[in-house]
Length: 153
Image (cartoon, rainbow, N blue to C red):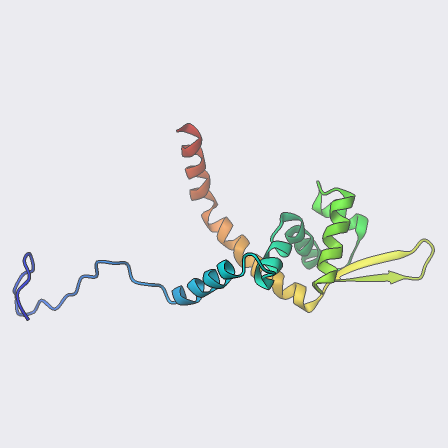
């Protein structure tokens, strides 16, 4: 091995310096996800479709409301979520039910009573949302500082 310029030629110097940052463990998987998403962008891509369906704020809030409070009637959920319109909550719950994330139970009473509840699949999704919320809480101070800097500039 020849001596490189700027490298001390000491007998105990076995340190290696990497010029490029080391790839993280999941890099290949993420590249593959991105590749598949881009090659299917003009077709129905199940991953894009599912992520689009569940990642809007109303779906996330409905899932957290049901996960946090258990079975809820429509108006209870509307009250828990707050500023959601009746129409948007209806659409959101129908979509979550169609994806088997929420069950809707109608009781044969007068007036009819309807309850919504998370399915096991819905609970498993909520657990993933919790990771995202934890990340947001962990990084909110740094992000808010950066936003304030951007507003000033």
